[in-house]
Length: 239
Image (cartoon, rainbow, N blue to C red; front, side, top):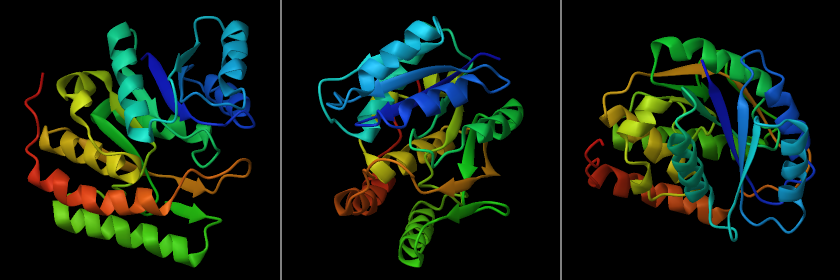
């Protein structure tokens, strides 16, 4: 099973080496694609150094500026599918909130699923290091999205996922319009609409230790409004 991990970055020079090397060290020997949004802190240069140290396993896709999480994943998925090299594409954060060791758990379940979600809200899942206010917002947001969309997924806003490449090929990834948490909701919902087998495995989600969070009030508001747009918009025909 050939695996690619796609990770968006913006000003993550303090995290990217640790993240990439930890992913490369997993038993499945994943490759890594970093999609960098023009980071001024030297993130791209650090990824280029990693690519030299690990030839053929580390790739860099540079974009012109900070264009958003959703469009970064769309660009990464499009690039990966165009290569026709990988059977499974994993998406995850660079900041340590998604433990690279948990990639193993997601890949264990991909044999009987089309999409595996690393979930904070199934038995065994956990959110560590967050204040109660942020935990409440996240839990209520998931309940809200799940209720509006009638989706049988506990962690609709989760961003740690393993996709079968053939599922992404069937979906029109360029049609995904949301960003931030809204993007995570939309992609999982479109997979369900396409009849994909979606399973959740428990993960422990931790707050970042280094760097500045990209979360903002605007991203949260966009996710709330995106839920109703996602529900009203018919899923595009599968390609």
